[in-house]
Length: 201
Image (cartoon, rainbow, N blue to C red; front, side, top):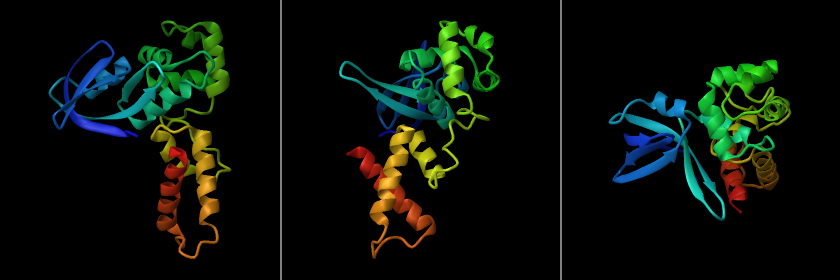
């Protein structure tokens, strides 16, 4: 799983950015405004990534921040919106305006995004209102005792429900172990490690 790449912007065209890292040039598909935010060719930057893999295609998507990646993943939870549609939406409206429109239920503003119709805009409001707040992406439910760990796994590209379930499974596995971490950061690190192992199964 790739979390991010750090390297030199070597070029790009349209929604594609080329990033050189250690002798390898990566091709990343990105929202247009994210590409603009990273600066011109020749500059060093960090790109947060998401690897989308299907039977017919494998593509690496890039984002200017972890929050933007979270937005990309959340958009795909809306019926009828896939990776390409998510990219187009994010290219057609900036993050702050998207969050505002969702929170206020401003369907008319969302309809102004190229390729976004009224029905899909309404579905977005119903599915995402309250999930993208203050540029911080979707937050874990307050009832979860592992909110910060869930958010960290989501930022790595894992599904939120699957991440929460993996952490619950990890916590159960740790309970009663004589060599289990006693608490604090040590216990969180062990939970995080076990959760990633569970998600990789």
